[in-house]
Structure formats: structure tokens, C-alpha cells
Length: 315
Image 1 (cartoon, one colour):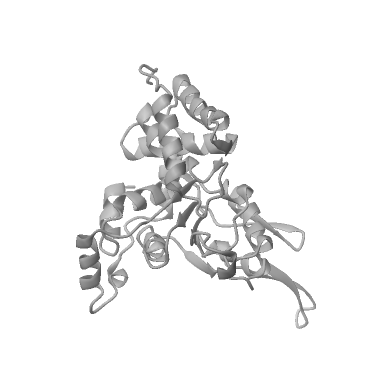
Image 2: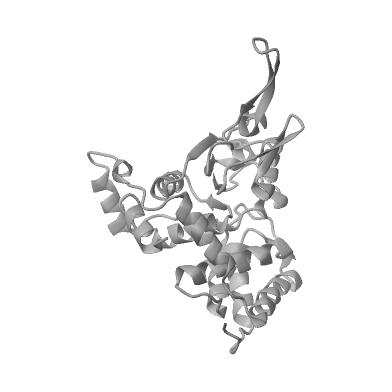
């Protein structure tokens, strides 16, 4: 899969967010999930839709709100009078390679829990039967900052946040990029001009290549040292989990593959570390966002204080 070609096609619709889109593609290709937290109207849903088109993925969307039920996610079993038997009615997680979970933090905890099994195990148990989802399968979730409970926004449980490979912020565009956006949408929707430049076979082939990327023992120790530093930091209440270390290594291998290498270097770990860990740590102060400047400062401090291996074995 040509990552540059994918990004170039995406930029026909979304300008100035190449770095964010690069990371989203990393998560999808590696078999992970991503959560986009930012203010409304900055392009979170647009980016998710554009990625599904350009990567040739079948996509479904769930617009979460306080009335969304778990069955709206997984589907349900009902009795079919005509056939005289129970019948499974699939939810939007089935038949899709990419699920857009829009405003996920507006749903109830029961509804959010319905996603846990499918995100981790690529299956959903409905009517006592475990039903597999498509392969590949990834979730792109969007959420607004926790402004106030009065606005119908709930806090995602830490167990669910830990299932997301990365947490990313889109941010406001630059003046130049916003002018491009206004001009592009003056007469038509640029998303209509997007074309798929890769497909499921390319993603699975790239995933197989990622599996073969070599990780030296020193790289394993470096990733673990960074995680342990978050667990021991005096300002961090909850540190990075072992699952977080696994994701860090997987995404580092993905980055190495995208860069044309079959081995991981320390820079790969350092590049993915903040976005993999920002939503996995919890500070001792109550915060209104998952992605906060304070968390990034803490992670940057840990990254600077943890020595990277200077020499390591290459294949």
C-alpha cells in the first residue's frame, strides 16, 4: 500500500491535516481503533468518511445519543412468525470494515460497553451466539470535550478508552487551509471527487508485512521503560497498561513499514508514544478532556527523561 498516494487523495477533501490522517491510517492498517476528540465542526466526521472512501472500506455509522440502545450497535434476535423461528437482525457493526461511532460519549455506559467485545475480540455476542465481524475491522470514534453533564456528555470508562490505539485531536485549520476549505465547498462537496486508491487486500497484505517487522530486545526494553515511567510518575494516577505497550510496539512496527524498513528504530517508538498514551494515563486533577496539554507535557517530560537505546541489533 502506497501511504503517500492515500494521503494525497485524502488532501483533495481535507487540507492541512496530513499528520492526523497518517496516524489514523496507521491505526486502521495495524488493526486498531482511533478516537478523535475535539470541538464540533472541525472535520472529525469528514475525515472518517473520507478515509473509508479512499481506502476502499465498507463503512457504517452510528450517531450516538442518550437514547441509543446496545441493540442499536450489535443487533438483536427476534421471532419471525413467517419462518417459525428466531432470526438475527444484524446491527451496524456487521457488514462493515470501518465503523464510525459519532459522538460516542453521548451514549450511556451500557451502550458504550456493547463496543468493548467487538473492539477487542472482533466479535459480538448476540442471543448467546458469538458472531464475528468483518476482517479488517476498525472503529473511528468521535467525541466532544466533557464540558458539562447538562449537555448530555458522559465520561468514557477507562476500560473502553484503553481499547483505542490512539487518541487524536484535529484542531482548527490554518488560515490558508480554511480559505481552501471555503473555496472548495463553495459550489460542490469535494468528497464527491474522492476515489479509492487501495482496498481490503492491500490492507491485509500490509498487515502481513507489519507482522514480519523485526523488533530488537533493546526496543522492547525502551517501550517498557516509557510505560513504567508513567506508572511511577508522581503526577500520574493511572499509568500505561500492558495493552498500551503492545499497541505502542504494533504502531511502531507499522510506522517502520510505512517508512520502508523491516525493523523498528527508537524514533518509531518516540513518534507514536504520546498519541498512544495520552488517553491511557490519568492525572490527579479532574480534567474536562481526554487530550489535554498537561498530559502531553507529562508524556513529553517522560520521553525526554527516558534514554533511548543508541545501539541495537538490526536484522
